[in-house]
Structure formats: C-alpha cells, structure tokens
Image 1: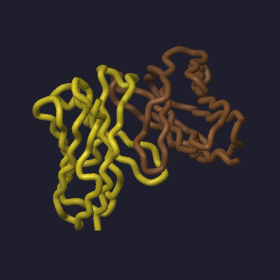
Image 2 (image 1 turned 90 degrees about the vertical axis):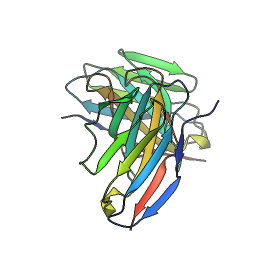
Image 3 (image 1 turned 120 degrees about the vertical axis):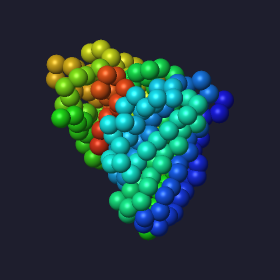
Image 4 (image 1 turned 135 degrees about the vertical axis):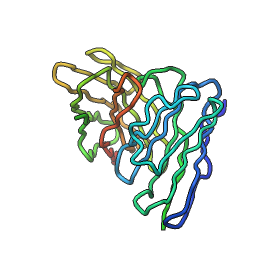
Length: 115
Length: 110
C-alpha cells in the first residue's frame, strides 16, 4: 500500500516568507507526528496529532510554527516569517496506535531552504 | 532533562558484528526504539524494547537494561547496505512525544 507522502520534496524560500508543508499519512493511521532534522542530527519532535487534535505541541520552537489536521488525515505544517535557522528537513510520520512506542512510518521529508 | 547519547561514528568490517550503544536520561521511561536512516532517506523502524533483555529480529538484536539506563543495537553478519545512521529513541510525555538520540553513523568497509 501507499506509504506516507510529503509535498513538496524541496522548498526554497526567502527570509520572511510564509510556507506550508503537507503530509499525507498512511490511510487509517490516527497518530501523526512532525519532526525537524538538521544535518547530522536526529529528528527533533515538533508536534503530535491524535485524530484532528494536537495532543502535544511542546516541540514547536515558537509561535511562527503552526500545524493543523482538520479532518484527521492530511496535515499541514505552516511557518510564518521564515528565518534562515528554519532551514532543515521536515519529516512527517504516522502510526496506528496512540503511543509513542508504536512503530512510526516516516515520509521522505521536505527539504526547506530559507535564503 | 531528557536526552539520549550515542557514539557519533562507528566503522566495522563486512561480515563482522557491531554494537551501537545508547545511554539515556529521562524522568519517565516507557521503552527504547531503534531506527535506521540511510543518507537522504527516511528513518525506518527496527525494534522496540519495553522490558529488560534482548529482542532478536533476524540479523539485528536490541538490548535494554533499565537499571543501567542503557541499551544497544547489535548488528550481525554486516553487509555493505547496513551503512547508515542508527538512532535510539524513547516515548515520553505520556507515551506520545518521541525523543530521538544524536545518532550513530555506521560505515561498513570491505
């Protein structure tokens, strides 16, 4: 079956612009995660959705970052007033269960470059 | 605070065995997971240890000791395709938030 998909695969933007990153999870997976990964580092937790609601958004670095999942499936990560430090690969993952120890299936990521 | 520490790089010979260690500090612990990530690729799940002891899955095994706040991933009969980064991770914050370690880059040489 289809895995987790993310669009766009690459996004180049200018400092100060607004960007939206999309994640399409595996059908039927209720849990959805967003991570940010910088070169040579592990994925850094941003936010976790269970269904439509953000169950844990403690990893969002500041109020420029926001994510939604209005129908409990596709999710969009929104970044306002982008900064050069936001440049990273943004990973989305989904899982069947409601716990963090459940196997997570990752998408290929969106590489964001802020010039 | 919460953290997981791993060696940054490990080199091993094709056909050999290699152990990748992970030590952690956390106020609430629910088990340890391992993920593999090839350069430019997405992380893929390898294993999860909820209890102390060894879990075996083919050529890969994972071990956990809660009393020592320590775990490791054991890769046997190394193949060139095993060259990748390996991350330990644990769920926290009520099972939901997942924290990843710093990652170990494994290079398998002929």
